[in-house]
Length: 246
Ligand code: NAP
Image 1: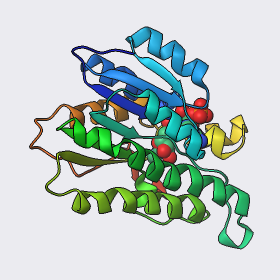
Image 2: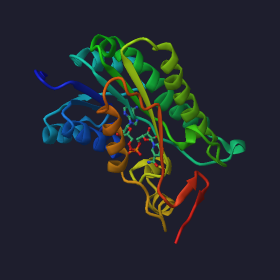
Image 3: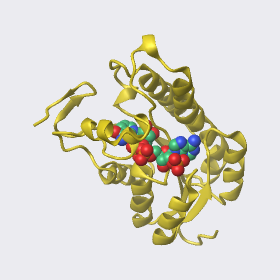
């Protein structure tokens, strides 16, 4: 992997949805993108298209994260995007395995990737960490405590770094989307297409590219400009629980 004139950007969860769109947007903005996910074949297809690099990555596996970090020759931008939800049940019926998956992927995954790549981000002299949280990191909603809890905790890792890294050459941007049509709901409902489709019925949701555009914008501001937190939602969505459907 070599990139004589392009800075390196790492995107986790780049095999689909927001991560895949972000990899494309960052490549268009001049980055050499390293795409990480468990489905490395999908990452490799996108990497071929954007002259990037695909490396297998499971953010829930410490060894996988170490091997990934060792394979990355440099890092100016880390996009902590890998994550998602499992289930939509009241607390009284919570599935511990699903909660564990959400905490391992969203929270510990973000922590691990950030720890692993922080030395390279600092060494770049102009590092930037973008973390994709959610409006679930801002609000509580019924039946969502596993995901809202994990997203709040992920956001705390990220927001705490804003203070801890003050004075260091690393910017921190949290991107918190509302409803985006990706495989997110399909994963949440374990492949139940009908349930997934119902989430987006009667509304024009954000697309993965809408979010990717925002990430690329934040990443291409002058290095003294830190976009701290960006919340973006479809026009027809006021909050996690309140949308206007036709
Ligand atoms: P998606 O299409 O399901 O993408 C999720 C990505 O995460 C996939 O590339 C998946 O890749 C990766 N991933 C999951 N577990 C992983 C692991 N253990 N190691 C490495 N990668 C892993 O959904 P999305 O909407 O783009 O989600 C991206 C992020 O946006 C998530 O953090 C999600 O919470 C957040 N978000 C989504 C929405 C929404 O409405 N869609 C709203 C707000 C925030 P592999 O399966 O190949 O590993």
